[in-house]
Length: 114
Length: 114
Image 1 (cartoon, rainbow over the protein chains, first blue to last red):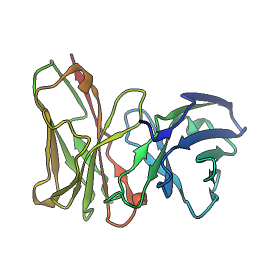
Image 2: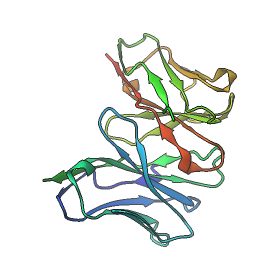
Image 3: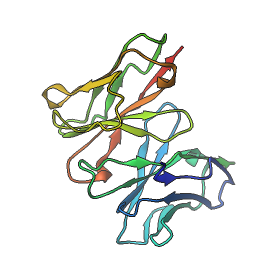
């Protein structure tokens, strides 16, 4: 049972345009959501997060939107740059998870074309 | 601040052989996680330690996988005997207690079982 799903395995965007990566979840106990970025041969690195008490969090070119009623979150990258090409994972955490275990989606490979 | 160190970076073994991975977390991080990432999927938690005690090992295949964290610092993950389906990247992460946002991942060990 996949509790966190990223339905688009890949996304291609032109440099300078907006990239929108989507994530859906099924567990209503999740209260904290994160996006990680992963380059080949490296571990995932934290990008941005959002608490369930908010519906938007912005950090420079990156904005995460949370729609709790739809159990959906999205990551917007504006403007997209070639260096943003990577695999993006969304992850979620529930308060009952001792030690704050993260549940990850399957990832979306973003390719930004120059 | 030094990151999470993992070794080896790559390992190729035959099925039914044994293998061990090592992880050194960020200094002072009490929580240590081992994740398995199969190609095309998101990381899946195998085991979580708080200091040298196990918090969650519900998804660890205990008939073949074992892990320890002696003295609450370094950790080793062992597979014996390995199966073809164990081919994956094994990621170690650490965090300070108190929030899911403090995760730092190592670069991982890519295991190929032939």
